[in-house]
Length: 631
Image (cartoon, rainbow, N blue to C red):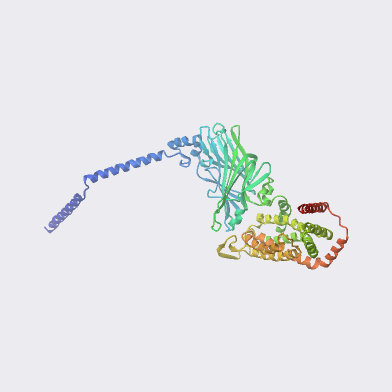
């Protein structure tokens, strides 16, 4: 009976709980208005999902949105309506990259656009010991813009190419084809050879005469944003520029301003030069025209930067029989004179060695000499030895210069006496001054000419060191890299025109220049005559003696330490040569005696001296006539 009673009680309990739940459900049931709102929201959600599905089915409008390699019929129809016959290539291509290597280059080709997506120089690193990439992360593009016979304007950079990799002997051939069908296509053909930074590059079409509109211009657009590779942004940017050759051997450059552009005809090559590394596009037959642009991307040199400049070139492609067939070459490698010169295609002009005689001196004297010394000497020692040889060869020039200064110093009392005697007649004073200098065999020009002889050497070396690829990442003493500035102290602030570091070689060079100028300008100031109405040359020389070392200190603090090393050694040697000449070679008493002997001898005047004398006499006569007329 108790078990039954428990069962009845349990049943009663369950019934009570069920009743309570039903009551709560009844109390919380939605009102008719709420039910209607829920049904409306559900219907709107279903309509939104159907609309999105329809949009997704009709969204394909370009190769970028299109699923490459798809066989979906609806997408094929939509893509063909946008790309026409070039939809075929997108439908059969893949998005994978093609990777090839040689002993010098590691290359990646992107199927989209058919151009290089990565160029790595395997044997070189940057100032942080990272691999050198000329192309990476979409910083460069090569694009052909063309029209089609069905009135479309397309760009190859947006279309997908089909790659194949084969061997041609030891060379690797990469063929990228933008297909209309299996037998009709636009092809980029690259050939990579071992031991060579140059790739054979051909653009050709097959069976596209009825597809590509040959009446519209077809342009090849080549662009790059150049990566920073050096420690000094300003120094690297100074030598980063566009160089192009045109009209059968002429060359020009641009890129030193914020924004610059230029055009040329019959262009044989264009180089995007990044100081020590270069990208070059060369044509077997010249492009009819070329348009080039350079933009500076370094807005603040105090801020670390990725890119230095942005370059672009626009070059027209010509049709022959309705097809394109352009044979070219692509170079990705060092801006090394020795490497570029071996191609025998005037690529050495990309390396800025100076124009005229300056470039000649570098090509045929300094580059071979430095290469010879670098074979058996560390590069820092090679710079010192080369400097010693140059200064010894030019020592006779310095001797002539100081001999002329010594003569002018001895004649100064007599010259001052002539000016005092004819202080009211400047023309007469000039005549007697020239006559005395002529008899004594002393002339201010005799001191200037030796200095002018040294200028080509000075300027040639100024161009040589920033372009010497062999100095790159070569250390000497405290300098880690002779192609960049040396650092003995980092500053917590930036000094305008100086930088945020202290370089020792420019300091040493500035000190040497000061003492050199003190030795040379001291004699010049002593022998320099003062002339009424003329600038005080002695005072100007004194200012230059202090100004030149300061200018050197600021200007070269961010320059290559190899160049500062050269100027330091050069001026130290010059000081030594001057001391030897003044103390052991030149004898003022002997020079004075020789001058007196020269005065006694009849001196034959040159044609120039005769002409000058005649002009001065005529001027004196004219002056006297004018004075008589006034009276």
